[in-house]
Length: 266
Image: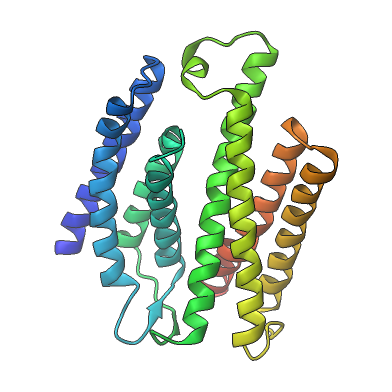
């Protein structure tokens, strides 16, 4: 019963944070004080959400990463990264998309039972799993940033810079933030693949082969994107397409495979 109360309160606070950030963006208020006033409900929600994750995911038997628990953990990490990043970078407006999505993830976790014990706590494979989740979460933020960058670029090209576009950082700053997120996320993805080959007996076992292949494809997409940025200065639509394509592959690898295995096939 207490998990339902905590989950409901977390959902409410996530939605409050998203609404207040939207109002702040619409009114073109960009002061640092207003930013943290809007983010305060999200910070409280993250603590409550973390409490739920300790109850559902970190069990005595090991990591319970059933599909809804996994989605909840990923979205929690996305929000936590957004809050930390907002200390020095103008990333708080990504919460307009991330916070409601995380609230939905909490609702799914509280409503549907999903149990899949992946590994005992403290094992080397647990390190691989957590690195993989961190990489996916950071690249998810990059994907949201790419969507926002697309909207901003379209408004500027159509000579409609008004509305919430004025409250966003300059296009060059948004693009620089995008590649910073991709760079760190790609580094974590490299560690994820490396740790997988080290700690797992067979990364191409029948129950892992689809996830491994898709993860490698996603890794290759982001590697090409970063190389193109360094070699040819890729930006704008080209960078956005590669970012969303790589993220789409990773969604299939991390979330799509779990949905197929745990919901469709069972």
